[in-house]
Image 1 (cartoon, rainbow, N blue to C red):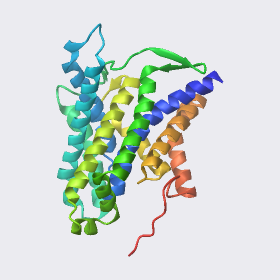
Image 2: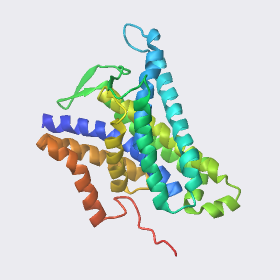
Image 3: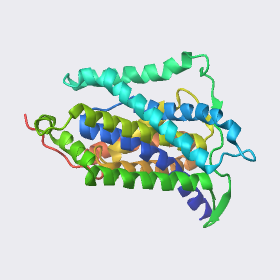
Image 4: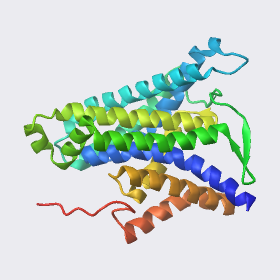
Length: 303
């Protein structure tokens, strides 16, 4: 039973990363109607950027650890940086193709992903070699139901749930959120009602990028190593999470992330090779049984 709770903690830890990243996928798809396959690389930018930001604040360490105020500042700077990168990608690469066939935007997203992975690799101060991620959170260990739980794991899980709650509130109970929902329903009608479409989509990409930045920090804190390719696999799994929960639904993205994270950890415990395949097996099953996802709804598209 102790092993069960231990694996469950690891699954929730990994699932929180998937869920935060899947929120960006689902927001962009729900509002713009495109799959941004470069979204996983925003996680890498957030993690690698946090590495350099933390290095800049290294002189403020007290007894070898960062004060919580400095940690909060590092996270906010990394979130803003990743959000602005995502907004820039949308303005430069995606906005000119908004009225083009979706396949063109999809191919462009793959190209953007390849650029975001290989351009930092070519920079001398980043390079292709992995780097050790600095310790931002407390390393204290707790015992819960016989399982070993670190403070970092608790922060990751709580942060993911809290972020989902804040995002759900913003989308459903604020002016910006109502504009997002209007644009997702009908861009032309929203434009006629005076809504700035470009502004709403830019905000959407900024929020998605900021969430990817948080997920990168969480993942690198749990597995303290960063490199330019770390977002590729995590982005694929987060996309599976979004589809599993119902892409376009915020609650579904969170649910799918946690389900996939737990499933992968338990599958890895049985067989390390099977752990990598379980995500794609789940994707195939969900597309066959429930194509709209667990919380999604099939929409009849008028021609």
